[in-house]
Length: 163
Image 1 (cartoon, rainbow, N blue to C red):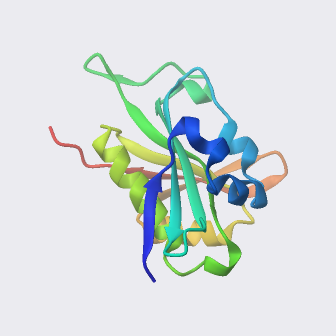
Image 2 (image 1 turned 45 degrees about the vertical axis):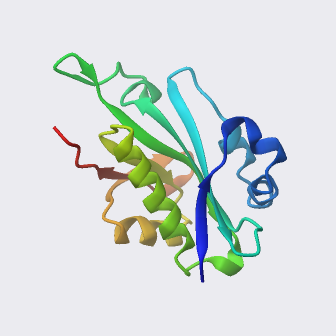
Image 3 (image 1 turned 135 degrees about the vertical axis):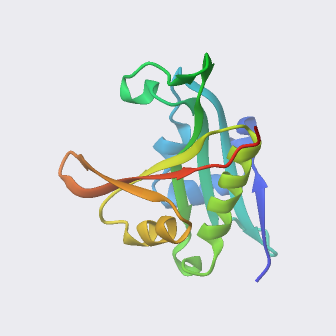
């Protein structure tokens, strides 16, 4: 199975075929969400040879801290950034076939290129498949309670940066 991971330009989402998949998987609000502390926003789509998108991953680059109400983390006067995954989905018939792994690896590679210190995401407790994927990729896990979800987790993957 040959799958291309391509970046969807931010301004082109409304006319891109991945939009239908985002809506189908109920991720529209998370794909559209923006905050003042987002430095940039990116969307990857997984597309097989037939051209119909089967997965996506939206992430933002941001300073570590402001999204939790804290000041930006700085080291030696420089703001430390992260790639935070806000939306991620794979069409049901394509799950557990490497599509999600390819999308997550694309984010990891892009984050390292952009100088991010880490990749972070939240996953609700009922999303065991995403939990398995993140652990398989080497993410650390930190449990968090959100509303009635007592099994959700933050996943963090530190990146190795060139000095």
